[in-house]
Amino acid sequence: MTKVNLSLPEVQIREIRINSITGFQGRAEELVNCSRCGLKDNTRSFTQCVGCATSKAACMTILVQDGAVISHGPVGCSSCYHEFAFTYRVNSPLRGVEKPTQRRIYSTNLTENDTVYGGNVKLAKAIREVYERTRPKVIFVLTTCAVGIIGDDVESVCDEAEEELGVPVAAVFCEGFRSTVWTTGFDAGYHGIARKVIKPPRKRREDMINVINFWGSDVFADWFAPFGAKPNYITPYSTVESLASSSEAAATVQACSTLGSYLGAVLEQEFGVPELPTAPPYGIVQTDRWFRALGRLLRKEEIAERVIGEKKAEYIPKIEALKARFKEIAAGRPLTAYVTGGAAHGHALLSVLGELGIQAAGAAIFHHDPLFDNGEPGNDQLAQRVRDYGDVPNFNVCNKQEFELVNVLNRLRPDLLLARHGGMTLWGAKLGIPSLLIGDEHYSMGYEGLIHYGERILETLENDEFVKNLASHAVNPYTKWWLKQAPNTFLAKKERSL
Image (tube, rainbow, N blue to C red; front, side, top):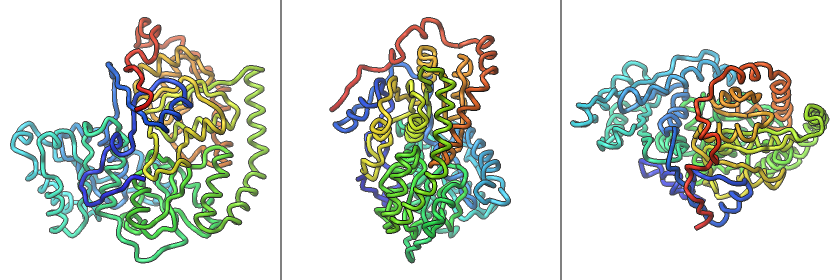
């Protein structure tokens, strides 16, 4: 188990903390076995694009209802923040926010002159101005590469401002060059929240369960009700009060272990909130495990068994009907699909395919965590996918290298492309492959989630005229030379174990 240290201003990066990697090409089972005996990353001699940790930290802080965010750096580094303001306006009503307010997003707008003489004074002034304008209950200061290079003392400036203003001012160290695994930005955001916002528990609340998630629809309220509890969602749409009291919850569960790995460990080790020691509920087998683990943790096993029985009686016949429909479409051959997405949710979608009887032709997963911060083998979704539904060939770990995705899709030509992130389905559609993007990570969860997602897959497969027409007119930006190469051409020779 990772030992967290909230006395340090910066979170330890994932490459060091849990040995995360961004380069692998092979089979899923091979990766699982390598992860057990030691795993070394494989670098690329050519990289088209990468994600940035700053945007991931922004995702976790901008959506705090009564907070404000300052990007300390050149104004261009905050150019991606608007997407989270849009997300807030569109999705917050789904989670009970009756009147979504404008997001409080600012930049210190460092110039070339500031990189020579330092930006501390400019930052201190910005914090005071943001406080006077908006009166937030917390201010998050997100660092950028420029600030990391010139060495601004962001922590001291934030501490001084906090003492003066009387509200938490959290420094979030999320420079893009700090880590090759951009999900370290999630950890940086949560580290700042844990250090400055979460308070020691005054009591233990058996009626509240923390849910670490993105912005999915509210499915947990229905699931927790039989156990006499309600979800406390963190952090999208949280308030400072709900974050501060998260230390009092009876347990913590996750919608995505990639996202919540670090915060789950912090809540357990620093505040005594036990983390559910099993992966999120995607697929029938794992949903059974999840409810039983929740029942054991809450000491309400009989309720868990009742919930499992009732839900399976309602949904299993519908799931079987969907599986039969997919067999009809396949007409005697395997129906195939390719998955692209972040690590844990990508693994979850592979399990959903296995449950629906659709063959996984391969996957492009943006990074790989051999083990999460809690050290629990039960959280290894990829291992469970392999064990429950079989191996996945053409398993590629890549940090959004779209040139590799296009190469693989052109070779495999699956019946369907499933994506979690915006912009990825374009490549399948250009090749005439029916492509489905669903941003709600809760949409495929649980027994009912298989119905929801399965029906959308069915709809996508049965309405393929658009992608067929697009493929006949689209121009592929990649050369014929590249499409003839092996997808891992630019990936260094594998080092399977240490």
